[in-house]
Length: 427
Ligand SMILES: NC(=O)c1ccc[n+]([C@@H]2O[C@H](COP(=O)([O-])OP(=O)(O)OC[C@H]3O[C@@H](n4cnc5c(N)ncnc54)[C@H](OP(=O)(O)O)[C@@H]3O)[C@@H](O)[C@H]2O)c1
Image 1 (cartoon, rainbow, N blue to C red):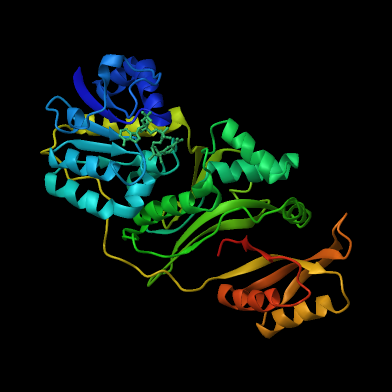
Image 2 (image 1 turned 30 degrees about the horizontal axis):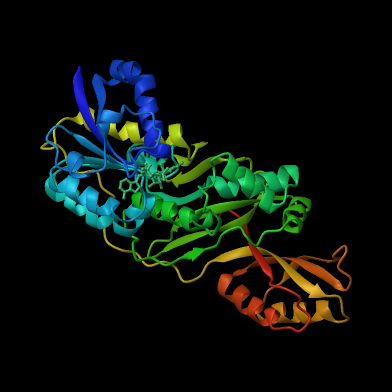
């Protein structure tokens, strides 16, 4: 049996899950891989906290792991940019393989880390950085390696999907669904990165880099979260035959890429429409397989630890640092992000109930050549004189829609900020 000596940086949610999973499945892992996984040392900030680790393994000194001769693989589960980046670079400098779940760091500094790893001929495993327990990076990088990938569409943020599912299926308000997501450990105490779409954007960047072989560290693209969605929108979407999901979209358009993260109305037959609660799902379009969908638990202690260990085991199986290239995001340079895209739209415009309001709104849309397939006006119960105009607009350019919304927002008949949701259709 070949030992694999692991140095663990961080023993919070995922780190504790990893310790638990190694203890629970050590013999099955050994049977399948011929590897004996051994956690040699664990870096934490506060050694007094209760953890599922023998106290003698804990250290607050990173050098005990990063510079130690008896560690083969450093597993970084601290999160954030620093000190995680510095620790990883130091481990690579000592010619240690690294496994990380840190999407934020890889999205910001992946090219630097992978370059250093290639120079040192060590590997960086990062399966857990995108969608926790779902082996989507391995599916794209290995299983679909013979495909030219044209598009990825995913539900990649568990918090957003949980909240939208509860609002849609059980008519919970946003705030109640968020509190429940936090109680269940799906959402962080500070859910900003999830709710505002940044977490999904980091995952989309890594997925697109893997699928299209480009570096996107400097890429700017549309990122919207779900805070603007109200019960009214969920209900109207359902009446129109749609479900609202927070999606991440990447398309290879040839000379440019389309990348965007936002809530969208999906038709009931779309493969992602039935992805519920904290589940994640990613649809990949490849020229040989046509369509592949992979789903599962995108976060949580054990699912994420499962992905981390899959990398540790692959590194252990493949032998010494001298052999084999670094695992890296394959980069053939940069590609620009397309400035515009087309979509159908759902609009909810909060209005004052005064004569002529509909005419003002339709005129503004008409000026941008936007035609309407559905329009309904409703009054808001308990708020006399206030209402909503809900519109489904035919396919148009995002830039044209934005121009029209800017104009509509300035109308004196508006009583609040317009809600703009895209209706997602496969091209
Ligand atoms: N949670 C998930 O479901 C999930 C899913 C996918 C990916 N990830 C990624 O996995 C990584 C870890 O997430 P997590 O949820 O496990 O985080 P977490 O619960 O906050 O745990 C972080 C751990 O790192 C330690 N730590 C933080 N700063 C440190 C420092 N300066 N020096 C030494 N130790 C330090 C903490 O020590 P103390 O315990 O002493 O405070 C804690 O043990 C992140 O990159 C995250 O994005 C998480």
